[in-house]
Length: 88
Image (cartoon, rainbow, N blue to C red):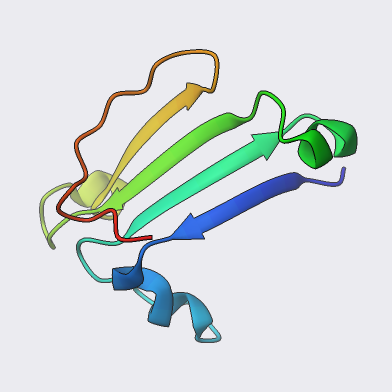
């Protein structure tokens, strides 16, 4: 199936995103993904499912590859304090 999504990466991780291959993102990287159910929802930017990923310092969460995840919907409030990282 075809995926319809938008992906945003803050300036901390932007350089890594531009590289080819399986690169490791630096701590402080924030990735926000908007996933839409179909093309028309994507075109209208209507009701995306949100996933926010934060790259933690090495060793903070080995089970998740040192990533922290937040998931939600645009219909629900998703409260996060990323002032330190969210430089989009």
